[in-house]
Length: 427
Ligand SMILES: [Fe+2]
Image (cartoon, helix red, strand yellow):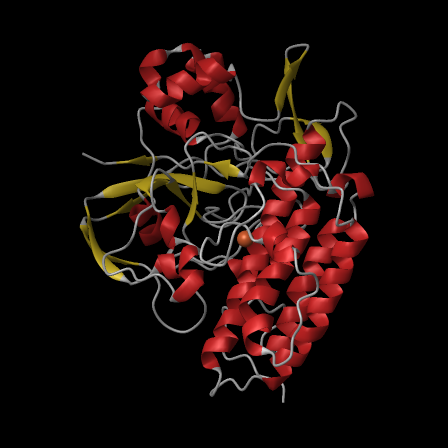
């Protein structure tokens, strides 16, 4: 019997799709994302925080093998006895794992071996899903759904890691040609105002959410206002041209140290040629579009820009209060652009384009309980020294994002599609 999907948040490509169809659809998207790559692109690791494409393909597969097939499918034999060591990312309670910074040094298993691994696990996952009864096996069905959302997270990482790798090449390789779209101007800058009061934050109800989005709880917010759209490249250029990168008074201490150590003068992937700014995109080397949201900035840069503008970054709770009632729509992975873009007057761009840095430390909500067992390591153990980002990006699948979703990265990180939206506290 095929388990029927009951959740609207499951990463289905169409409403009412079965769990089996959702599984096939998500795994197919991963394979399709690989299609533009050359064999060499699968293997190289361009930075310690990035992983080779080959590793993403194998690690997401290991997740299903380790957390579903091994414990739940009678008689299942792992594809290879050492793959657990190679493709476990960080689950200490599962066992030791291969050092992350060395993932790009592995020529074996080959890409072909990894695709064979995927096919093996897919075949057995189809068998397992066919055995699951949505009522009797609700917990196991949830775990398959978690595996699908995990794979969707890695779809975005696969793209951002591939971009980081391709950007290293002086040949400016094109991952996907940009569509020939008419230029769009950014929406007018304005403010969305919200009264002081008690707001709800966090996930509750039907559908999928990660444990770090729960429990839903009340927060008190003073009166606040959020910008009607993210900060644009043109606005960020004004900050650069005003000497923003050279003015210590604008920077957090850690940020000022990082700017000077790394020699940052612009967002990641930007390059000035004959006085004009260009940047590397997944569609190759392009002129900066002044109307598009600025992207690939660290928390330090986002914070310094906001200070220069006389504003601040929103808290994650302000962001969620503003986005909670909006439809999940925007320039997400599904649009195929793979680059933040201006949206005209059509949208406030809370979803898609760029993950928006918030000033909120990534920590546990009151009453937070991590998932039981090894999967409790998925989110909870990272709740220190990172900041929350909201809203998804042009590389986030639409069925993966929601208003309560909490992404998190370290303040200097900027290789994800990261940008910012201004906030202010009205008098
Ligand atoms: Fe993972």
